[in-house]
Image 1 (tube, rainbow, N blue to C red):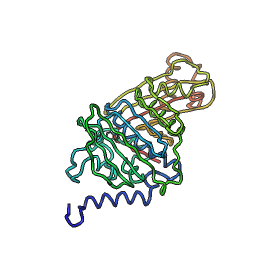
Image 2 (image 1 turned 45 degrees about the horizontal axis):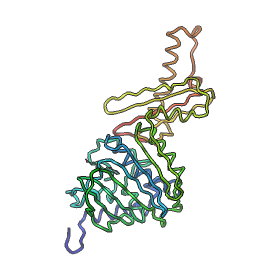
Image 3 (image 1 turned 90 degrees about the vertical axis):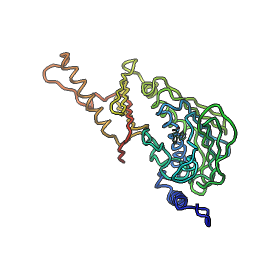
Image 4 (image 1 turned 180 degrees about the horizontal axis):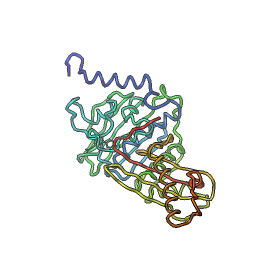
Length: 333
Ligand code: 0RA
């Protein structure tokens, strides 16, 4: 560090990065309305889900606190706290204050889960009146506090711990957000969806303002998701069809179940993000469904003459979930 200023060049860059986020928050989180507000929580939760995808975390607990803050706790490895040589600061501080440093430094995870934008937890920090992080790692408890993205206390060792994990608590900055009231139901539906998409992962949400609570955990993963989507529908077959395949680090899962309606309901996801505008995974699925059923019917002589079923016919009453997880996704739209 330069002795005159107390700052070296890399730290000046850090502050400029977070200032850019506070100046134009929508560029990073989409909007500063209720949607953007809830996006902050998804951003933090997605970091914990990444730990789960790596097999290091089995439970995530979200709490809406009475004072307007939210806490997200996981039992993952804990954010590293050792010195980051490039910045000569604890790694935790870098993850929380440097744009795009949020994820693993190795790029081996499916790390682009980040809600809508995958911008990293430093963006949440920059847009929070305060953020407090507690890390259990190396047999110790570490703690650090930030205000509007800036370090206000150095990393503290607060005693011993016999397990690992990360707790991030933050209060959105009301000078940035038009809406600062978290909705239990809005958060619940995204957390339920994440639990469906990550089989076995336990996600809880507790509302300390009202004592409401939800626990989401699905041994069936997206198979359970399809059953949930067909709740109160008359299904044409009791057991959903389910299959999965992994190849070259890419994982594909499909679950489907027909009901007696005419509606088509296909939900497609890439790295836990709903790909509303479709993509190759959705197009591939639609084409494969049409081809497979037609091939089956032809091979089993179920068709008269040159009969053929159209894709639209085969999607009437279809409820399906397609989930792909891939290391380096290309998102459009
Ligand atoms: C960077 C590197 C490693 C883990 C994490 C970040 C991490 C971040 C968050 C955010 C919320 N929960 C988290 N858990 C972990 C890898 C650590 C290692 O190699 O041991």
